[in-house]
Each structure stands twice: as structure tokens, then as C-alpha cells.
Length: 561
Image 1 (cartoon, rainbow, N blue to C red):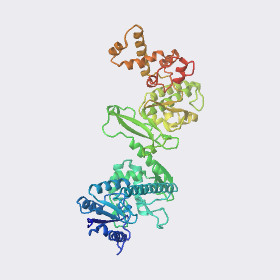
Image 2 (image 1 turned 90 degrees about the vertical axis):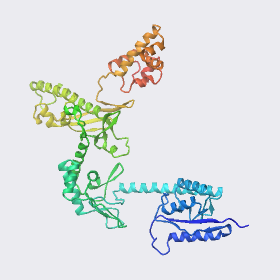
Image 3 (image 1 turned 45 degrees about the vertical axis):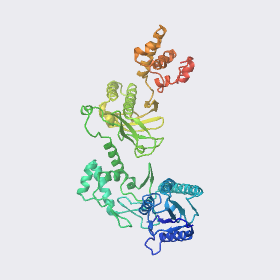
Image 4 (image 1 turned 30 degrees about the vertical axis):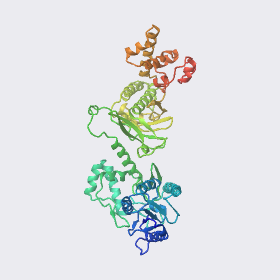
């Protein structure tokens, strides 16, 4: 009895196009080996098809290959019953893609065989072996990718250029063995011109128009394949990316980190710093329609722009988000905006930070004025007048007079537990109607405790010694608790109280516990002396202990308070 004919298709692939122009290349070698294997199986009814399915210069990490797609179409049409490849990774390098292929082969009644690995998918053991091999192949590919990423990170840490299209102003080092950049004199002049234009104009759109008028163009790069890229007028986005690229001051960026490079800088540090400050100031400017508050001269959106740095020296950049249609502003460590996470970075609520800084400066000046230490030389007669002017200045600061905090503050640094501020001598002297030389130099420096404490999802900034601050939510809940407990003692049912107030019985039950807090804790809540992290949610999360000392320990009070 004759065996049924099995029509075979030979599939070949090569990842790179190197050597494909030779008379006998890798694809031909694979096809020849597969044809010989099919001939050896002639007794099983195997017959080689006349169509070649060759994918040259295409990675096995994707199924989007012309020859493979033609092969799959022929399989679906029933023209192929066996796919023959030299090695399994010629068909795919992905375990997930292989599962899809096998499922599609099964649906069309087609099997798969590897010439050099002596198994096929016509049997369950062959499928098991193939899955194991592909699992190791995928693991090897992922490990290789991790190794490459680690190598790139280590090389950039040493300041090496890791290839790709070089930025405008630089060319690859003429020695192919040296991973570095050399300055392209003509393009470097274009880079300096763009930095100078922004330093002068301070507007990306204006710089773009001026650069186009001057005929400045993006980098013209010719690939080995002959394809040409660039040489076009500079867009606004390209100019912004150029101005933010630290490579022009001799540094290399890798993700959120910046390292000293081994190439020569094109722009000096002074120009770079000025441009970065102007870019950050521009990012804080309000866009779109002005609100009525801005038109009436309310406090600027970001008076601390360019003034503060975190403990690593990174600038705190103003940013914002929208929640429930409301804009919420923050000051964020600049490296967090670029992407990635850093536990040492700050994300501070802007309004609270601005108010805390203003209150700290005001408190500092009032304290010095009370002791006649604002002036370099003590003058009791003039001291009283200075003290009155300081108090007036402090009132303006704490009330948020537009432009005042921005003018008075020179710079500041926020560390893990401390905030350090330095005031502008000229601005302070003008505000107090004094000569700058009359200001005591020690009055220009401020150092105070600083902490960001979480209260639910809200961050609360605490600077210096915290003044008593009653929590309105706690006060309201405490008042309601006493009223509900009084009703319960008078015999009113809980269900009736819930119906009258419009709350669930569980709501009344959990919040009524506040009436059983110790007198000391209730007194602290009334005066605003409770710990900053003591919230209503924290109290009702668990049953309130009846022991007062246990309450004090649980809610962060000293025992016996």
C-alpha cells in the first residue's frame, strides 16, 4: 500500500543581510540541507515543494516576515503538510510566537520538523522537546539583552559614546575602535548660535523663527545603506531637545543619570546654566486663558521657580496636574520629570511649600527685629522703626503679596530634615528702607527643621516649630460624636439618629467613638496640638481603646498627656 504524499515546504531565514549577495549564501546552505533531509524521507511519502520561502536580513523576533507570511497563506490553503527548517530558531525565537504558529499549523493539518535537531511536531514528545528548547532560547535572548543594557550603562558611566546617530555638533571618532565623539566645527557653531539665541530671546518659537531665517539646519547623516536623514529646518521640539542635552557641556546622559563624558564641550557652563534657568522659568509660565485671579494680580503660579534645590543639588521644577477639573501645582526634583523614580527626589505641594517658605522668612525676620538684630549696628532709636517695618513686611509675606517672596529669596536647599534659605540683601534693604550695607549678614541666612508628613493621600509640609493648627475635620467629627452619644444616652435609637442625619448606622457608630477619647487628647484636638499625622481616618480605622494610656500610645501622644 502506497503511503500518502506529504508536500513539504522549506523555510530559511538569516538575521543580517551580510553575505546575501554571494553566489552561495547562508540561505542556500539551509535550503540544501533541508532538501537532502526531505529526500531521505522519500519512503515516508515526503515531496519537496518547488516554492522557496526565504527571509534574508530579518530578525526572528517578529512574525512580520514576507516569506513567512506567504508560507502561512499556503499552509492555510492546504498546499503544505510539512514545514522543514534547518534549526528551530530559523522559524522563530519567541516562545509565544511559536505557540501561535503551532496552533495555526494544527488547524491546517500541518507539522514542523527541524533538520539538525532530529524531532518534529507530529508527535507529542517532539512538541515537548521543542517547547523546552525554545524556553531556553528565549531565556538566553533575555539574558543577552540584560547584558547589553548593563554594558551600555557601564560604558556611559565612563563617559563613552555608545553609537547611533551623533548629535548636531559632533561626529563619531575617526578611529572605529574608539567610542567617542569629536567636534564638527561647522555644526558646533550652529549649536552655539542656538544657545545664544535662546539666552537672548528666551522663547523657543522666536528661536525657531530666527534659526530658520539664518538658514540653520538639523544634522545631515548618511547611513551605510545610502539613506540620508536630516538637513531640514529645526523644529521647536528639536531646539528644545538640543538645549536640554547635557552632551554639549561634555557630559553623557543615561536615563535619569548624567556622567562626565570623554568628549570636548561645545557650550560653557555659564551659558548652559542661564539657558536651563530660563527654560525652567518658561515651563512655569501659565498657558492659555488667564484666570480672573491672575488678571487681578494674584500670586504668580510659581514664585519659587529656580530658587530651590534638593539635597542632591537638583533644581525643584514647578509642574502641575489636574484632578476633578482642578489644577494642582507641585515643585518636583527635575530628574523626576525626565522619567524614572528616585527615593531622594522631592514632590512637594506648591501652595503649601510657598506658604511655608514665606512663613519661615517672616518668622525669622520678626524674631531678629524683636532682638534688634536686623541691622549690622544696633541702634535702639532706629530699631523700633525697623521693627515696625519688619512686621509690616512679614504681614505682606504671609498674606502672599505678589512678587514679594520671589524678590526676597535668593536661593534655598531642602534636605531630608532641614531647609536652608538665603535672602537677597538688596531686596530686603529696599523693603525695609535701609542701605544694603546696614543689613546684618547673619540675617540673610535661615535654617529650620523641615518635614513632609503624610496625612492620607495629602502631604503636609512642616517647617520650623509647628504652631497649633486645629483640624476642622476632626473638630467637626468630635462635636458630632458628643451630640450623638448624648442622644444615645437619652434613649434615642441608633436607627433614628441615622435616619435624621442621613448617614448609615455604621457611620454613626464608628464616629461616635471620638467622644470616648481621653480629655487630654480632646483638649489637644481643640487647641490644634495633635500630631500632624493624626487624622479622623486613622482614629476610626480601628476601635478606640478605652484605656487612656493606650490611646496616647496609639495616636502618638506622650503617655499620660
